[in-house]
Length: 275
Ligand SMILES: [Zn+2]
Image 1 (cartoon, helix red, strand yellow):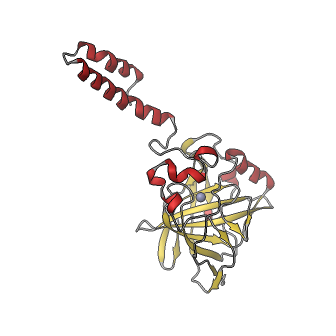
Image 2: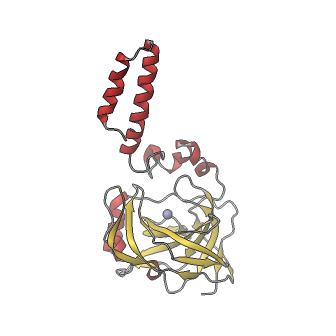
Image 3: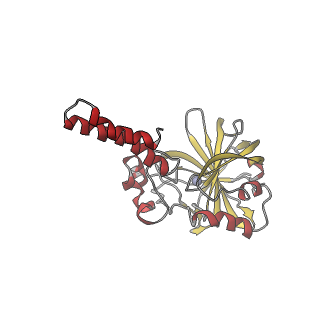
């Protein structure tokens, strides 16, 4: 990006250029727009061209679909997330095989959540398909509800297969004992919006998982704009614990960063009934 000084050059330039005045004006306006618009976008945060959205107020969830044409699915989608989980149908499903390894704590604050970009090589196998771990992040309070009840927080581990299909493992979090596996994450939350930095420590997502790994599965969407559908959701039925102090750290950053519950619209919830 050019320095502000070059804006003055563009503005001053046409005076000496032998074009008619209306041509000069077009050059000046085009030159200014080209320089200033990226600058404005940059100052708005590091999601340079993405439209702004939030969890409350005029840019809150009820307005997401209207904020940008690319967000239309947030309003028109029929398979949206999160949902209230009640009366899932028990079924004997093949267990998920988790192959998670440790990763450097590549941590960032994108203004909506704190996220860790996971080192390559960790994956899960779901019905014979490999899904690589991309990142994990949190919401507080939880996004999904069980029988109408929200939890203090929820962790999302986001995976992608080679065809681009997304699968998210959701961990509901209750208040209880201090969680040492999540301490590296909770203790290094960047308070301000910031690009990813390596915190110099490691984290292992396999240590986040509860010992009993039965899941409730359904087809849903991203819970943030653009709310894209075709996301395979795998909610671990057994919550994990964080201490009151750890939960307070999660809550201290964004107020609340959970999308409201979305209609089920006849979708089937399946609960794996075999640990
Ligand atoms: Zn999420």
